[in-house]
Amino acid sequence: MNKMGESAENYLETILILLERKGNVRAIDIANELDFSKPSVSVALKHLREQGHVFVSDDGLLSLTESGKRIAETIYERHQVLTGFFISLGVPEKIAQADACKIEHIISPQTFEAIKQSLKK
Image (cartoon, rainbow, N blue to C red; front, side, top):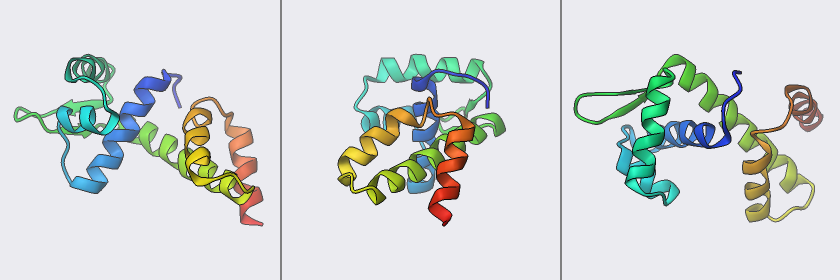
């Protein structure tokens, strides 16, 4: 996965989750989900479009490009696995989710794979 900022990864992950939940996504949906201002979301989406990770249709619907989807799925998988791992250690769910959200962006592929393998045992 290309190195990109945590914020950009969070936007891509949020778009993926909202697409699965709602079927279509607009910038206002992201602003509401993340509790960000619409102008902040617009700036972030502009950068993601320029990087080739997001496509915006003429009617304002967002979709992920192949690269955007790949990044979003990777981050989302990390979030789910890490949350489950922390919960299995006895961490309360709310804390496990918050910690997973921070760690999912910085964990090495090797450490993440080791955690996944340990959970399979």
